[in-house]
Amino acid sequence: EEWKDRGAAVSVRRELDKSGRPVVRQVKKGVRDFSFGRILGEGSYSTVYFATDRQTLKEYAIKVLEKRHIIKEKKIKYVNIEKNTLNRLTEHPGIVRLYYTFQDETSLYYVLDLCNGGELLGVLKRTGTFDVECTRYYGAQILDAIDYMHSRGVIHRDLKPENVLLDHQMHVKITDFGTARLLPDPRTAQDTKADGGDGLDSDSRNGDDGRAASFVGTAEYVSPELLTHKNACKASDLWAFGCIIYQLLAGRPPFKAGSEYLTFQKIVNLEYEFPQGFPPLARDLVERLLVLDPARRLTIEHIKNHEFFSGQQFGRFLWRSKAPRL
Ligand code: ATP
Image (tube, rainbow, N blue to C red):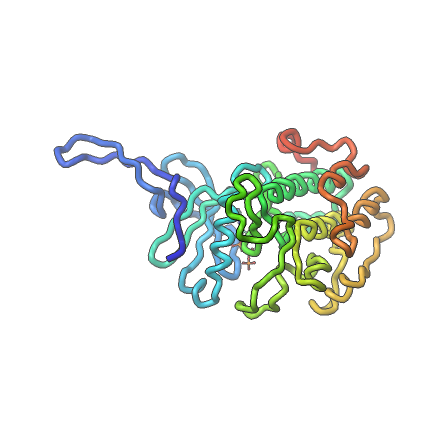
């Protein structure tokens, strides 16, 4: 019942009125306005299809969530978080855009940007490691997208190479906002019933999905403050960013062990090593990101000004520039 469809999306229908005169009516887009193609991927609660708008022939990815399954698994809250968050993040090329939402009796539908290039993780697995040029380029795009989401009051909380998708130009599109935290939107600042806007957030998932109450995200990328203080803040996304930069160059994440528990131990003890030959400027950047105290981690501005990114464009030019060969 809480599910409200995005209203702006309309499709034009030509019909005859009562007296037989042709009229053009605008109707909300629905399942029948798209032709569904192959499956692009499957998640635990969803199937993502390639789809084409029958009218415009524009291509999309449509994520289909089965209502029964969502209710049974008590995921309604996360489905709504994802939709509300994506509806706040519609103006940046580095974030998967949600164009329309609708539903029928059995399912919910999200019409999203098509990401033909797959996951950054898949690309990394194929290449093994990235060189400095590719790491700088993809790092800059990820950082630019984080900058935008933080400016809109969104903490992602589960950044990792699987959640970084690539479009047909091999440009970054960040996805998976189901565990995001919405702070009051700094631009409207009316809905200030949440926390004070400093980005600090005490997570209150009371184990309603069977996972530990304090843990959201993925073990390898989770920040130490989430493990020790059950707090996620904007800087937690920058911890994950540090892990991703490390992983692109090393081919594996910095903290990885046989179990979640052992991985957490490594994180809170800052137990990781750089492989031989790890580029020194990147090493310096990672060391300033993988800092236990979130207040002492580099900020986004610091990162942009770090020598590793020297000469790198951010903002509009970055998204116009061609992706380097992988
Ligand atoms: P889980 O819910 O188990 O964590 P997930 O978050 O990956 O899985 P989805 O976001 O539904 O679940 O994605 C399922 C698969 O579809 C993923 O493998 C992803 O690569 C692919 N996919 C998701 N969104 C898109 C998109 N916009 N374009 C292309 N492929 C996509």
